[in-house]
Amino acid sequence: MEAAHVEHAGINLKPSARLHEESPAEAPMEVGKTVGNIEVEDPIFRCRDVDVYYGEKHAIKKVGVDIGKNQVLAMIGPSGCGKSTFLRCLNRMNDTVPNARVVGSIVLDGKDIHDKKQDVVQLRARVGMVFQKPNPFPKSIYENVAYGPRIHGLAGDRVELDEIVHNSLQRAGLWEEVKDRLAQPGTSLSGGQQQRLCIARTIAVNPEVILMDEPCSALDPIATARIEDLMEELRQSYAIVIVTHSMQQAARVSQRTAYFHLGDLIEVGETDRIFTNPRHKLTEDYITGRFG
Image 1 (cartoon, rainbow, N blue to C red):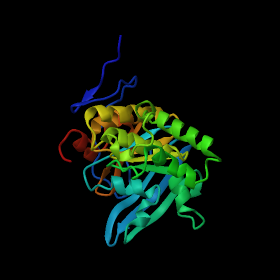
Image 2 (cartoon, helix red, strand yellow):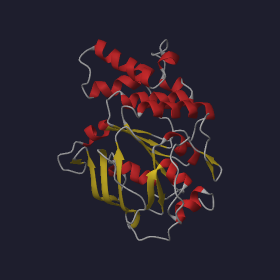
Image 3 (cartoon, rainbow, N blue to C red):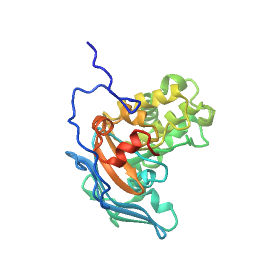
Image 4 (tube, helix red, strand yellow):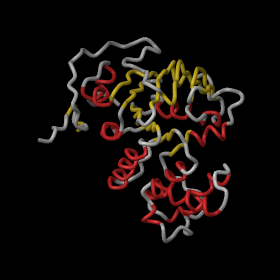
């Protein structure tokens, strides 16, 4: 007999074998006091007391969370709550924002990403990013994928480069659709295909982590389903952090969920627990649609 889908606040979650005891939602908390366990075993990223300032604006406040290997962490919350700001901290994209200042500890595989010896270009190869709107280079489909491995010296010759391009497009679920038109512009593809091309471009340089900033917001439901299926496959090899405004998507693709509110990380935990038994009132109000 098939396990029944749990339905809570209009959200259909993945089946779960676990049952959760009810606990009362908690009252407003102090800054830096996140509900739930921020730690995971053997994390790829370990973030502690992360603050982000844009000039005088305090955008992120004492955020601490681990990002596990071979897991998808979904970050949810209302617009302007700090999800994308925190995501951009993980590969130092905030370095490109005028007046942005990041304080705190962000450790990738045991090394502080803000160490003076850290090569930012190499960091962004290890921590790739897929943006909200597909942004293929104004190059051929082949060159979109080959560009990264070429500049990072990952291919010794054309044969190796061809193999990297083929494998990356294959893993992104795009090879069969484009194998006969690799010389055509990447911009000639549909929106969903362009986003998968950007994912292929990201994984071509062998990252350890893939960051996704609302990767399906501009896509139709069919293209969205393809990307979500792809995330489940990719997490077998990479850690994935996704920012999404769709709670249904967070429930479908992630193993852990983090809820942000006004720059604070309010609650973090296993996805089915967050959606079926939130421990903080702000989390409960958000997922039940009382605000957001």
